[in-house]
Image (cartoon, rainbow, N blue to C red):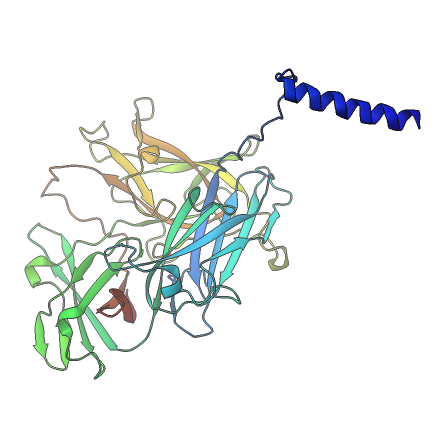
Length: 421
């Protein structure tokens, strides 16, 4: 009974203190700090459980897309994933209710830590469409992975496509000599037939061609070069053919052992250090095979399948490039590849080493098969320089968009993939 009276007296005194404004103002509740931005690596988005297939699926089918990525720590937490529809230029013109059947976002809840690796990481996997994520409208889409429940805190974005398969497409390509000695160019030509319900509106078509990666189109044509209705032909004139990325090289990191392009492995470092051989402008040891076409095959060939490749290591890879003159160049050199979507990333600008007479850059890669190139950012290229010819293969993806005036955006009515070797 004494304790009960004491408790009520404390409540009474506390209330009086608040009324008189003399409560302890120095006592504050601890604030929770927002989660730190995680370091993310090895992002993959591919179709039908095939790592080298571009992220394109047919609407209302059983085809699926797989998203994989790693967070470089064991401090795992759920993330959210949001979906956006875009027109062919990248504008987001529709509301979610117009392009999603059920929900516009989902939670990423499937993740697990790596096992027995020098570099700890957490692997995430998400497959869609699923029971929650389904699409009403075809076209170009973007998925955004964010902090859970917060669409403003975007960690990364990736583009994918949903098509209707409403048109017959046939693309042919020729290799032709350009205006520079030894320069070969690619001259594509796409012929298509429209269904009757769309045939009267050819001015609403946009035909885009993509070399290897689907990040950005190589070309988009709105007007047919030849109109033999209902057959339409799109493509550049001969003098406007494209100089494609012939100098793509291959790096096979699936087995960590000396040989091929791997000159030395330092297993005393965390992560392991991998030093590659010096490469020049005319050298590639894997010119005839192992093409990824912009979509790397990530994983170790030494790991049993039932372990889901969790033992695949991250390694610090040092690339070394020796220019023809064997001296520093008056313009920058960048390392580009399917690990950075073939972009001029400032973090992958190569530095000149006077000691080795070579350009060098190091980056962290997961075991796997990659394509890359040394990009000489020369504003005045040497017209006498012969084109390097490591890569006689081209994957050309044709996408046909139709401007739906009722929806006010572009639908994707057809797609075709061709590979030339």
